Length: 435
Ligand code: SF4
Image (tube, rainbow, N blue to C red; front, side, top):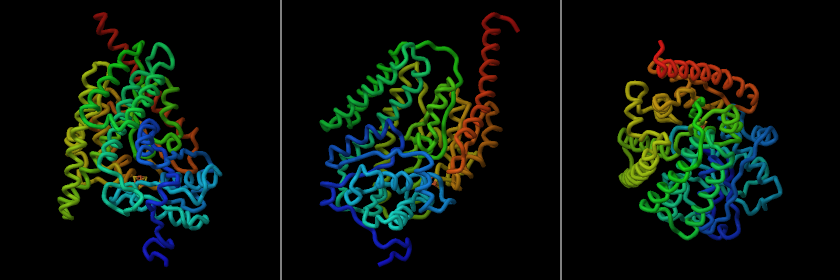
């Protein structure tokens, strides 16, 4: 029977029986984080593969089944999923797709229906789609994650944040090329082994490991020459996914910049805060409120451990706590503006500029109304509040060429380099006592 609301035949559930021999295909977003989360799911008996397809062929597959005015991540991920199933690497009758559902007003809530429809049209109506969410949407008997597993996944995210933040601040200055990458790989392997033994996810262990990670990266020999510092902010998937943002981080590294990527945990707290705010304003089930409040407390505790361990080392710049960011947004944009990346983006721009990352690339997908409001609508306002902000918004869609995007970023970097040189002249004059 057709589902009246979504226009696909039926929802295929992922059952306990399927868990034994199905492969879960997950779109890879942040490579470091997902490399850490993969062994946690494997430990629970899931066979997991990450998908990271890119290029015109993948996009054309997405465009064939998804309307081109849909937001770019939906289109790209649909293309990645169809490419994976048609690649011959998996049995099309033994795969299930995993996709996030944010539960809010953003289109991310509806991707899953869109993709089921696309798969039905493409001739794969029996592929189960699993919704990854914390709101209790679309339950599947084959997905019975214990609180312990969820805590482990959260720990994976925190370790991923730590490795991403400290490695980005060491790699551009390393004395011996490759030292930082080796340290990242070593830690991913070590943490993967720790998770496999069912350890490393409680606050005490996380604290101990984060301390050791910070010490390890701080000990890598570096030559601290002044470099242009650039932060990347914007829509969640595009910000972290190299196929989504045309390998933006690599490009900025090639341009001799130090790159700052905000933490994923911060975004998780921002999202949960938004859901709690909605409950406060519009009401809802008390049990949902209780679950969210507990989740919030756990995340606040983890946030504190993460930030404390970064702040403890003078070599590193730590991200701000979400509650501090929230204060920054006040008077700039309404806190109720929580669709997509909402108020978080404006607050991040102000925070990053104050910590030396005033050059900012804001990535936004074509067809994303929330990002148009919270990036394009906010850039001029935050620039007025902090004239040092040198930001450029880059749009991603199937027709946008990488060369064009990179040229626009290069223009922003030209201004950043001029500013850096002027700053150095001033500093030298000050040190030599001339005016
Ligand atoms: S934030 Fe924008 S691009 Fe991302 S899912 Fe929502 S509508 Fe789409």
